[in-house]
Image 1 (tube, helix red, strand yellow):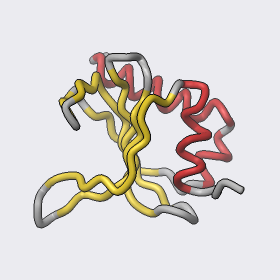
Image 2 (cartoon, one colour; image 1 turned 135 degrees about the vertical axis):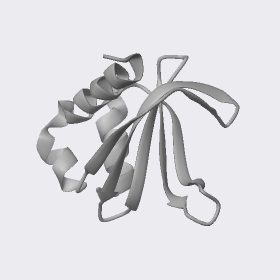
Image 3 (cartoon, rainbow, N blue to C red; image 1 turned 60 degrees about the vertical axis):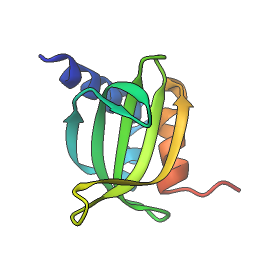
Length: 112
């Protein structure tokens, strides 16, 4: 298995750590492994992209593994006009045990 596929599989496993029902509540679908890239001047090792239909956000979520062994979570959509991903919100330095909670707060459940 290629390295970016293994990283995407691990990200999906960590998202499901809170329970699959949480991920299902986001309406998560269309999972795709993302190869390594450089974004925002930072080197991203690999990532996982998926679509969501949550109460707070509907669109694409990309979870990137950074060289610092933390995650960057991006919410946004692909612009057909610009042919690129347009980021609406970004959260950096997310640890693996906070990943599902962070995505849930951005997509489905507002903070009180």
